[in-house]
Image (cartoon, rainbow, N blue to C red; front, side, top):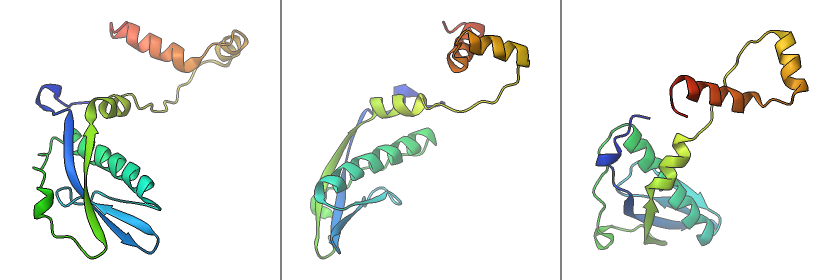
Length: 139
């Protein structure tokens, strides 16, 4: 990950527009184009709004794009059957979760070594992680 933590904010608050339509809520963020989600009820819509905003802000940070300045809720023009709500996110746990995402690696070892390792109940993922960390001096 190439993010510079010194320049990042940990807390963001953006207004979201919740629009009721046909038994569900669509959530958009006027200041975050492309950040859209929905929920079948208000609780789900709020949870989804928070998650969508976390991922959107994380991607902006990761791409080193400027985080927009949030609009004032009172300046947002609302469509019919809509309301605004402020959505607050705390980024440290989001960054931590995204940086600890696991990827699958394919490796090749001799069959006899694989057989002995399986007999001894070795966890290949743990073993490879430990070996890479040791090789890089990260242990």
